[in-house]
Image (cartoon, rainbow, N blue to C red; front, side, top):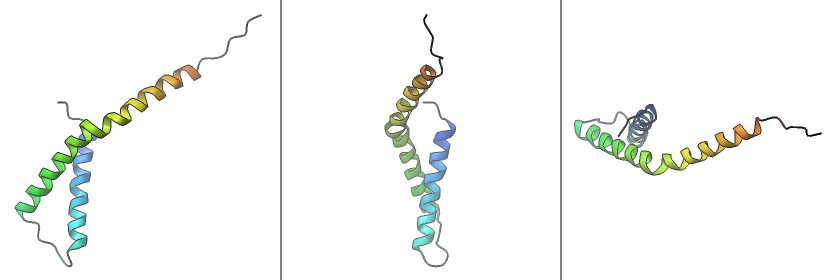
Length: 81
């Protein structure tokens, strides 16, 4: 399994969303214990794996088709006499 920058971005984003939700749901300063960090980390890793294998391939196929269409559109028309 090859890790990409997209995987890192999904991991950090998911972890940040969970910390933000904790901060918004708890008045004052929420307690961030090692248990909370472990749960958030495990959830972030799980979501990143799910994103990599289930969600991202749906968008990669669309990008490849668009690239092929763009290449065809760039060819000038020919004039036959």
